Image 1 (cartoon, helix red, strand yellow):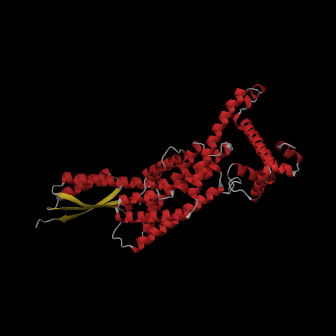
Image 2: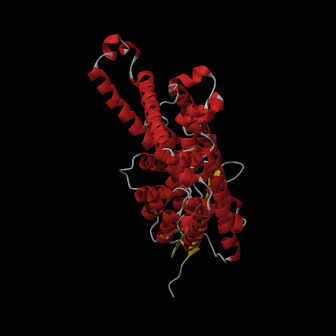
Image 3: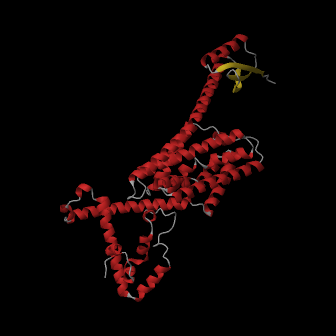
Length: 438
């Protein structure tokens, strides 16, 4: 009887040899190198391993072995020898450093014992990484449960945004399932898993379109007298939203990679950045308001790119990838995603930063104007302030009210003081409302 290790050299397969190695080994010899590598690293486009879904030949051989205990014992022994041989080869290739490959070490029992312990730790890490890959792959698959949760979350979030209810919006955050596909996309890039990238992308696109359509339909058929503060807050993104999204992606990736962190806590922490702005886009579409739509869309893109960026960094740092994978290839894929994400995020945040500074400058003008009126103009209060742009620059439209009309020099001092402190203002237009006690 030939040993399993001699099978490759003979180039022929007898019936006895097939029984020893089993159909999986014979099939593996016929596969191209790429397919064998993809299957070994679990990157076989989502196909289940043969041991998980035994084929007809497996059942046939199983029945054959049941009728022939001696041959079953021979097959079991051969499998053990093959497994141990593979383990030794992997220890030599991946655990023993080149400078340690000496005859003295090879003859040392303690040396092999130490290296085998290191190998066990590596295999445990590999099992944990594959578990993360499996969980995110399942979560990224567009199933009926995914669509149900997305629908319910969109309904709850839209209702909460229209009502201006923070508590209802938080409820939608807990239900929202959109975070998992984003994390799965980043993991797919790190692993080089095209199937996972494809599934997660499809889930993100379908979930996004579904949420926008649902919220747009609700907003279109619901009479809305005005936009609540919760809606308006998601149409003016700033740099703090970038920080929140990056932190959310970090928590999400770390929570999935480290099983000691509660998934419930992770879900609550990360969902805040996704469904509410997405439903705000739908509300803008349903009410035909372009400003609301574009503002919320900018916020959603910031969140999407930031979460993808931070999760890719975390997965790369924590080495969530096949332990025997090419480290340089993993590094290249991670750096490429990080560079692309940074470029896109920078292109978005530059105008966001500009508008953020504009809003800060406007609020500063309003605050100083209000303080000046309260201090210098007795019995006069600010009724309304608004800054608008024209061809010459920004103009402050100020509406005051009071029982007596201020003196002309007081109005001139007000204009001179405010214009002197804020050079972006080209002019100040003042209206006065006289109030009478009846």
